[in-house]
Length: 423
Image 1 (cartoon, rainbow, N blue to C red):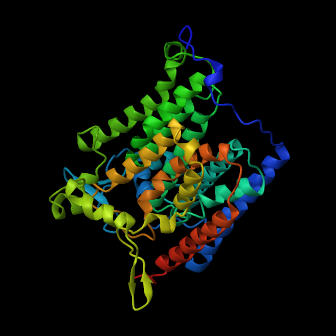
Image 2: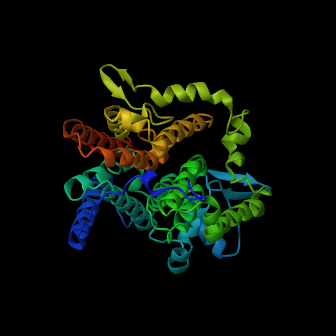
Image 3: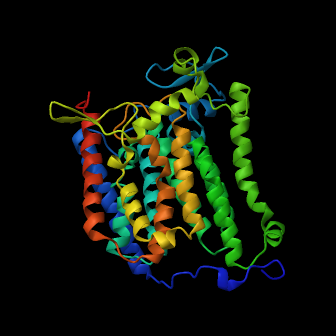
């Protein structure tokens, strides 16, 4: 370092890669057709559709009440997870999805195209997965393959096709986290506010995403390094980047205070299951041991039939084999991997998020797979991207079978769950 500026030779080189506009459009169209094609199979076998409103439409109900000048729902809905506080009823989830739905509820009233909106957000996430593959130097078939692996080949398939309250939030968080990571990885300083803003939105969908803030911060520091800026220079010139996420944070805290009298309370603590049935509360160390075991436990086998639990999940890597694929890349490139600080940080934060998730009273209700672990997939994709910059092989003999397994098990399992075949 000289005069507070890091020297250029210490900065990893960018991949010399170009892709034509025609190739981009071809990749994008192929990817979208692939994802929608798999969703279409789900809709065909379950009687649902892209244009059907969500059954568990908490965010729509909340958005419409906001438009009528009320913060509460006005009544209880027994089929939804509704918080009761001060004699009033509220949606118990972070509110960003309702904010997204506000203009659509204004236009369409109580029947906005929420499934179309949620799926569109998920498809945007798939496109950013593709853009991250372009960063590795891949284009065409293999770039599309890896983007599909992280969407339809993972447990994301189980949430990305629907706008039900739990799925909408996770789909939006998945996409917003990917957008944040992608723009944090680039050299361009003009988009530096985007990672912080979209990460704040991801937090407003899934609060535990806050665990990954150190990675976003580290990547932004790397963005400054790539442009030969010291920390002091960066802060002086780009302090305003904090304004968009700060506005999101103030809005979220304001809503929390207006509804529950606590800026940190989204409402989940006032669900009946936590207020009365769980004396330990929503989060407790008492849940850690059993939940950690479930995170890794194989599904039970009864009379020669594998029984996938629909509550609390089981071994996450069965439903998201991209975790296994990443492990193979990591071991194959171990010498390089241990020198990549951003990679080690990403892996450590994924484990930390899993660990903290296990403090929650449940590991997810009615579900196929292990839905909570989907939140880590964007960071896993980033980590894989770091390795694939160094390793141009796509390990076809392993990656293709794992992709087929991931797609098949999530497709069949989701259809089975929705049709009531899993119990």
